Length: 67
Image (cartoon, rainbow, N blue to C red; front, side):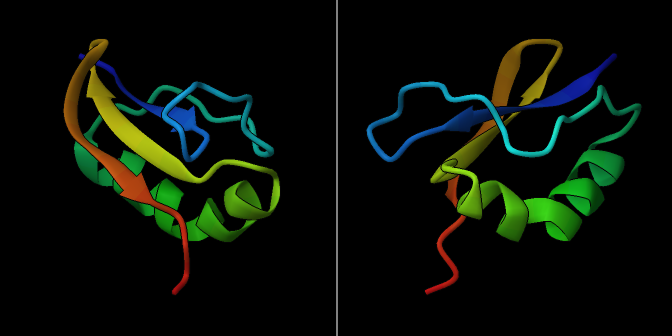
């Protein structure tokens, strides 16, 4: 089981992240990582993220807007 993030622009199209992610062994690890780097991702052009478990969306899109 692998947890990954999909990075999207505000229109929902995929974009390359400013910080290269990895595959995470648990949902908690994935969520901790996004909590640490979300500002860098937003500054790099990602507007929202979706959490995936083995390629299947679990939740999202979740906005990276600090407001």
